[in-house]
Length: 155
Image (cartoon, rainbow, N blue to C red; front, side, top):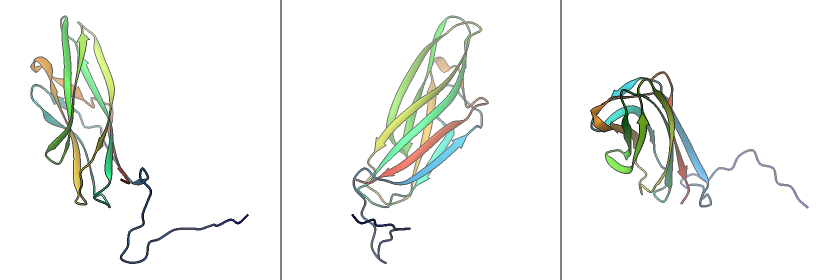
């Protein structure tokens, strides 16, 4: 039996190293703890990251955890919507609804996982936007941290 030990594998000049489908090619992380209050329509919540895919056949796996705070007043249903955009193109949308009652403060760390197929080798920016129900404000981050991770996955 033979053992092959290598310190690094590098493609020849002018070539890219072929990786098997599903291999993670690069990872980009970003986070924010800046407080943002959203009331009404969709608005940026300060959570974004950029990645430049090495191959047009790659997919981008997006993981985000969004921290928010809802402060109840009277018996009501409150909630928020989240959109994930690649540049200006919406690639995901979700609505969360919660019952929030008087003097109840609800803190959430809501996870989102999305696979995108951008078919591009240009720089791409992924960002999250939020909206609220009933034109009531929902505070995002609010003393906590929200995260986004982008992973280029070989196609």
